[in-house]
Image (cartoon, rainbow, N blue to C red; front, side):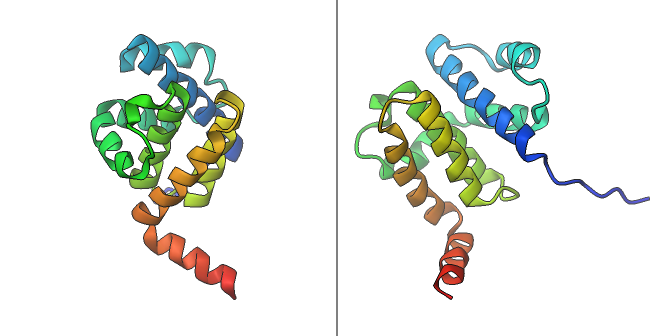
Length: 154
């Protein structure tokens, strides 16, 4: 018996990403561990959210932050340590999705994290995040990005 996988609920993913930005901030600020963050956010922020998506992206971000920072560093105009915690967290989370979750279209990743940066970041941080994610998308999803550009030219 085969089981078809349903499409993810867009609102559940959006809610998970919002919680991810908050969890990333808390991890960076308070050095909370993964289990503690998963428990805390399951209790207060993941109602009707895609909790499997949340757990996957958060674990990948925490467990591979050094690799993510190395991926992002050449795209930045300053050392990653000089980014504020919202920008750094958003870029790391988006880098996970762009490099590891090809089931999520790159435009969705960019749009969602730019909007979250507008919500949680400083006044013009979303412009910086958008520029970095555009460059990162071209590297990590070059076939998808090129196909999108070709489609728009037609």
